[in-house]
Every structure is written in structure tokens, then in C-alpha cells.
Length: 226
Ligand SMILES: NC(=O)c1ccc[n+]([C@@H]2O[C@H](COP(=O)([O-])OP(=O)(O)OC[C@H]3O[C@@H](n4cnc5c(N)ncnc54)[C@H](OP(=O)(O)O)[C@@H]3O)[C@@H](O)[C@H]2O)c1
Image 1 (spheres, helix red, strand yellow):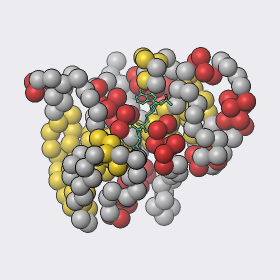
Image 2: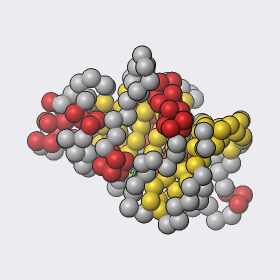
Image 3: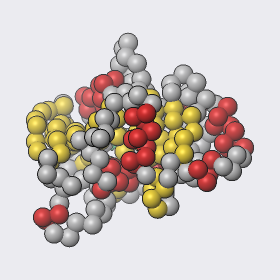
């Protein structure tokens, strides 16, 4: 049966394809109009997902700050439960539904970290891990679907974006490109194992518009895409 959760990937990158500097600094690559667009996506999607790397580096709130808008359910991938208990997402978990996906092995440890996450109101869910640090994204989507989620906004970071692409789970790609060059930095997309252009992941352009000084490039996955 086809999966019902629509997956939209969107993030801001530099002209040379980076989401952060080599030290991980990404605030802010894009301008205020693009930041507002990210909040529109948070309003329009039922859930927002980032990896533990982004939470540890940026300590984001991941809420929608547009007037009168509700915030999406926050979904975090964290096999080792290394997200700090003092992070904004954990500290506000009573107010905004927050799910951390981890491994059954980690959950079964039932240590103080597990207890404190639960006391903070975080929902802990176990999914299988394809390889260490790579939770099964299909299992994550199946769980979200069972919870009634129909739309997921994947905001980053690099490893998570790469994994969704590699797993063939991306429906839409909204690329925000800012007129800035970083040089050595964290690439938006890592190694996909593409060695021949015939193996490249291809998209179709739906629109290209301006967001202030930035460009918003909306793409959809090609039908024949793996
Ligand atoms: N420009 C932008 O729009 C934007 C947006 C977001 C983030 N960023 C930047 O991106 C950087 C963080 O990116 P990152 O690549 O280091 O970290 P990330 O993609 O946010 O998180 C990666 C971590 O997620 C966990 N994970 C669990 N299952 C996974 C799976 N199937 N695939 C991938 N990851 C999985 C792994 O850690 P565990 O072992 O803990 O499970 C992995 O190391 C930061 O510098 C941040 O500022 C930029």
C-alpha cells in the first residue's frame, strides 16, 4: 500500500551548496523572507523532523512563530539519546508534542536519561536501526502514519537530508538558495553513492521565485525516480 505521509524537504543553502560553515554555524544563511517561509512550512505540515546533530548544534525550538498558527509535532532522530535534557525542544515538550525516535536497545536501558525525557513530556519511540546512527526512516514514517500524520517537513541537517534522499522517501524539495558563498562547509547533501550521471537523483521544477534576496526553487521527485 502506498505510504500516506507526504515528505517535503526544505532548507537554506549557500550558492556553493552548503547548509553550514565547517564549524556548523548556519544562522543565518538566508534572509528574513526565507525564515518566514520556513515558518509557513511549519504551519502547513503536521510534523517537522530534524536529526540530533541539528538539535545539539543549534538548539532550535522548531515551533511556528506566525501569529495564530499552531506548531507542528516535533520529530527528532536520536539513536543514542544524546539530545540535551536542557534543550529547548525538551524543555517545551509539555506544550508542543515532541517525539524522539531511538533504538529499542537504548530505550530498554531504562536509565535516568530515559526517565527524565519521559518526565519532561517527550514521547520516546523505538524503531530498528539500519546501521549505527541510521534509524530506519521507513519505520519512522510508518509510525508517524499510524499516529495520523499525513505531512512531514524535513528541515535538516545534512545527514538527515541525505538519508531521506537515499531512501527514496522525498516527495517535494523546496530549496532556498541564498546569495552567499561559504567555501569549505557542511554540504546540503552528502555522498549518495552516485558514480554515473544515470544514477543521479532527478527532480522536476515546479516554480522558481524570489524570497527577498534569496531564491525559492520548488521541485518534485520524478516519477521514474528510484
Ligand atoms: N541551513 C539550513 O537550513 C539547516 C537546517 C538544519 C540544520 N542545519 C545545519 O546542519 C548541521 C547539522 O547537520 P548534521 O548532518 O551534522 O546532523 P543532522 O542531520 O541534524 O543529524 C544527524 C544525526 O541524526 C541521527 N540519525 C538517526 N537516524 C538517522 C538517519 N536515518 N539518517 C541520518 N541521521 C540519523 C544520527 O545521530 P544519532 O547517532 O544521535 O542517532 C545522525 O548523526 C548543523 O550545522 C545545522 O546548523 C542547517
